[in-house]
Length: 230
Image (cartoon, rainbow, N blue to C red; front, side, top):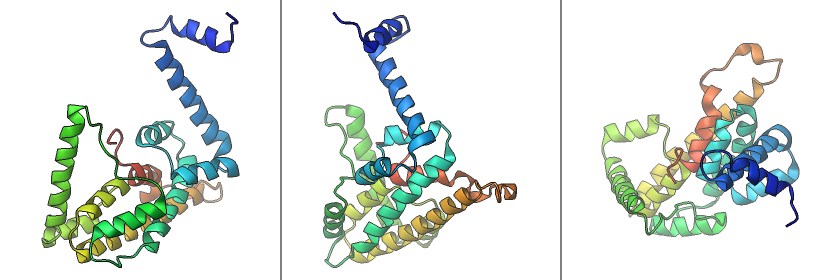
C-alpha cells in the first residue's frame, strides 16, 4: 500500500492506550478548533457556516469552551444569541397554543432544537422521562409567586429547554410570559458579552472584569444547554 501521513499517524497512535482512531479524531478536532479560535473567528466564510448551523452541537460547544479562549467564544455566541433573539422576536403567538408557535419558530429557524433522545439507550429513555416531568412541573410552578420570582432572577432556560417548555404549554398567556422573560435575559446576556469584549481592548483592560467575566460561558450554556446534556 502507498503510505500517506494518515498511515503513519495511525501507526504512532497504535502505540498509545485506547482506540487509535478515537485518539486521532479527537486530536484533529482539537486542532481544527484551535485554528478556528486563533485565526478564523472573524473570517466571513467560517462565520457564515456557523450562522447557518446556529452554532455547534452540545459536545463541540463545550470542547471549544475548554480551550479557554473567552474573547473568541464571546464574539461567536453574541452573534448566535442575536440570531436566536431576532427569530424569537419575529414569531408571535398569533394562534391559540404554544405548539403552533413552536412549529412556526422551528420552520423559521430550520433547526430542530428540542432534540430527541436515542430510542435504544435506557438512560436516554430515563433522561427524557425525568426531563418531561420537570418541564411540566416548571410550567405549573409559574402559578406560584415564589417560583415565578425565582425564575425571573435565575439564569433561565437553555434554548432547547425553553422550546421544550413552550411545546408543553397549553395556554398562550403562560407561554408568552415565559418568552418575554427569556427574551429579556437574552438581551441582558448580549450586553454582558459586548462589555466582556470591550474590556479586552487594552485601553479598558485596567477596569477588570465584573459579572460579565463568565458571560461567554453562560452564553454557550444558553444556546446548547449544560455540558453533556444533549
